[in-house]
Structures are given as C-alpha cells and as structure tokens.
Image (cartoon, rainbow, N blue to C red):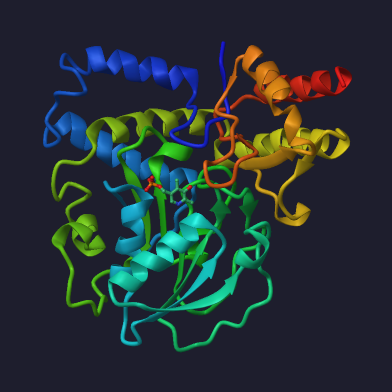
Length: 354
Ligand SMILES: *Cc1c(COP(=O)(O)O)cnc(C)c1O
C-alpha cells in the first residue's frame, strides 16, 4: 500500500476510485466516458454535483455554482475579467507562487493591481497581517492556502469590498462562510476530484457586471451559470468523479468532520517536526497550513538516508515543490491519519539511527 502525500493531483478515497472505475465500464449501460453530456443521465450528474457542492459548503441562496475547465490558472483570468468594474483596479495579496500568478494574469486583462501586502521578503514563509485596504478598488483577491510554501490564512481578510479567493488547495477541508465572498474558485484536483474541472462559486449580484471590453463567452460566469455549466462540453469524467467524492464526503460527516480530521493529522505531523531535532518547519508557526506541511532536514547532507527510509515505507509525493526543495506532506481529505503516522514513525526511526 502506498501513502500518497502528493500535492495535486492527489489522493481521493479508495471507494471513489473503485466507483469511478466501475462507471468507466458501466454507467447505465454505457461508459461514463462515452455518454453524451446532453443526455438526461449526465444532466442529472451535473445537477447533483452542483447541489452537493452547495450542501457541503452551506452555500447561501443568492450564489451560483459553475464548473469550467482551465484549472485555477484560467481562474486567475476569469476572476479578473468578471470582477473588473469602473476603477479597473484591484487589491491582491502576494503570498506565493499562485498568488503571484493571479496578479500577473489580472494585469494582462487590464487590471491595475495594487499589492496590498506581500510575504516575498521572507521567502513567503508567513501570511502578512499588516495592510490597509483602500476603498477605490473593484475587488480584493487572496489565496487561502499557499500550496507550495505551506502557509494558510487562519483568518480571512476582512473588507466591505467584493472578496475573491483562490481556494484551490483547501476548499472542502474546513468549514467556511461563503457569504463573506463574492467569488471563490478552485481547481478540482486537490480535494474534489480528478484534474479537468474547476469550481466557481459566485454571488449572483456580481454576474454580468464586468466592465471589460474583452469577454469571451466561455469565460463569462454569467453565461456559464445561465447555461448550467453546459455552454460547451464539460469535463464529464472529472465532474462525475467529483460527484462520487462529494457523496462520500457527505456520507462521512461532511466538511466539519474533515476539518476535525485534518487538524488532527496536521497536529500529529507538526508535533513531530517540532520535537525531532533533525527536522525544522519552514514557515511561521501561526500560519502553518493544515493541508501542505513543509519542512526540511536541519542537515541536508542526511537527505539520501532519509529519502531511502520514507520510500521504503511506501511513501510517495514527499519532495517539496521544485522551486523550494525540502519536503512537503500534503494532507488532503482522503489521506488517512494512519499514513501520517507512518511518516512520523519514519522520522522517529531516522532519528534513532543517528
Ligand atoms: C494548484 C494550484 C493552482 C494551479 O492550479 P491549476 O488547476 O493547475 O491551474 C492555483 N492556485 C492554487 C492555490 C493551487 O494550489
């Protein structure tokens, strides 16, 4: 058995893999891979997926859910295009690679980006808490969990301006208050399903208000919502497997239960990182992510020995992002605490050998 700590695409529940595999062979007599997206059987899948997203996250009335393709990377553009208003100016928090990507794409569509705060001065190892939000902005954008650096907002920015969030790597991992947001987007492949679908949760009153002169139909959230995510062929398989995962999530206590489990998993690993003299955490303690735990060896010359140990224990996906090095243990919903215990035991074993 493998213990998959990969950052994304990532582990999903085994039962979801099994049900997905079964549907490839037989989905009401056809393969899920060949069924028409206009067939009532798939329309029912889309409807239920959207309904379960709303249920799992307690999405209030006045909000719509849509699925598109392009990943969170296209989400950077979709967010900027759809939230552009008269000022053509927006505030962004620069807390790492993905936040910087969102800034870059917003500028390309003509947003005058004002960086409200940045943690670049300390290699993105903290969440900036000192900032002033001017009121002449169309919206404020932040990245709730910094997948690469391992930091996470424990308190979301507070503003009366429209709030936009890239929630790719911690959506469905914890209870959130959707009513605080005007737009949330997230690539499916980190807690929801296979790569291919991208989730958008948008406040209805923001639809159709863009002042952008450039608005491809596909990128227009108003049209996507009106067409019920069927403006063109949706990523059928990714949405179907997301549905299986959402059913499983709700049958297992929902997001509140996941939050409890995720905190327990993260605490177990952070305690060992702090206790074990051979390891050191890479980010500010109060900003540590419960999804992506980043750490390094105090003495990097030991890395070959440590790497051999965790690989021997069946662990995969532990190396840090190619831009940071070190280690990153991603603890998404489907990763059992038993896998975290295996990693902790390897770390203890490694210590005992020194
Ligand atoms: C993975 C990730 C992205 C990029 O997602 P794609 O779907 O590959 O475009 C963007 N933002 C965050 C926070 C991520 O974790």
